[in-house]
Image (cartoon, rainbow, N blue to C red; front, side, top):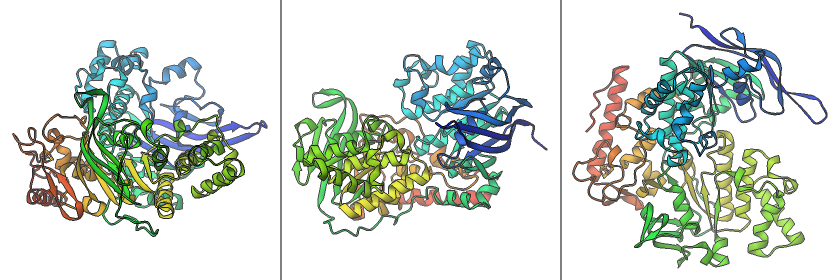
Length: 631
Ligand code: SF4
């Protein structure tokens, strides 16, 4: 049966006007339909026009752009030519927008509930009481912790992943006809990403509304979209059903996008070193470290984050630190850098103990350990020329001045594969990927031994992100610098790291060489992370939700527990009266591979074999559910 048409984009044209008053086309005649109950994905790299087109459904253009032709019809009415008052009703009423950054969407001074229900009440779609009830329903559907009361909190009192789900609740609250999802999961952990997608699309389908999904991530699209529109430079390259585009792409550009999809993490992807640095000497080590925030009382942090951490990074190695948000990854890097002195434990650089506070460290020690921040946008001073940004550490650590400094800046720019002329530009003149290269160049200028990279690729699209990883690999080869590479994206870490450290609720639950960590036996949490990496396969999401890791609940808030195993409340293999009470012992496996768990090696191997059997059974049963046994 033909579905009812809800929205029609007809020959849409959007232009900008340049400084000479000339018209520059940005969106060049785009047409597609959205039917009720359907999710239409707009995919393409940054600059493809996907966000600009999605905003047109709200009759809105970014500053500096204007509609140059075509129509956007909601139930047959062109929203672009509606009177301004009707357009205001449309925005947040008929069409709801779910933005990329939850932190920027919420007002920090107003409670979550007031903000989630505001648009629904303001547009007269629900009464305050109905909106409150609907909000709580959505909090449950989105598996938010303490769903009945979370709405009373302020935005800073919940984690980033939770805030993203609360933003989905905000958009869904007024039961809009159309939802615009603008990369709403890009910055999320894989487990949280799945939950947000599952819950949002379920509500959309159940309520027979529709959604426009804007993303660069094809693996995610394969799980949620009915129809896919592939865009490049403001034009449609191809469009068709999800099956058609994912399984039988015809356009060369779509095929290229497919290749940049994050690969399933596999062992054996680590890159061999070609430089001649001694690889087996510890570069930086963290021993028995406990750290947190809010000060230290009786040797314990007031708000504990990390507990009894032992990690070592060998010369020229890449150590990937993986885990969900709130598990302490960034805190670990901050402690290593001396930004957060630990309550207990030692940080050792080249065999010598470092002071916990960076202010007490020697200049030479500061120079050797450099931090690369996540958001290049906020890490670079917009008022400084690139040449000054890179020049400052050259002057500070190495005393370079004048011509010498100038030449070194050019050399470093070349190392990050940017032209020397960039020294005369400001950060705002660069793309996201270029800014991230400058962010790295600034750390490289110190000539460090260790670079601490905190989620440096998470804000970049997959093609640009893959290029940054290639660059880091080349830099490691060329300079022998060691990397601590923090990421919530297991595929990225697997493609690049020699060793992996898996953190959960502030403790190391598994660590070892990449090959070993990505091969069974797995710690139950590592197993969950591996099963949560989206595959470029339609139906992957449904299949995954049926596996038992998922059946026991994913993406619940990470709780930092004082005793027992931190993964206890989510672990499908937990042993009652043991795991919640006693700290798990460390299983020492081959090649330095360690797993912290109360299960024996044999029990972990059995669990893995059983998980595989269930999967096989499921494949044989086709659409029927396997008998999932959840202990
Ligand atoms: Fe699961 Fe217990 Fe092992 Fe923790 S110690 S991962 S709860 S089996």
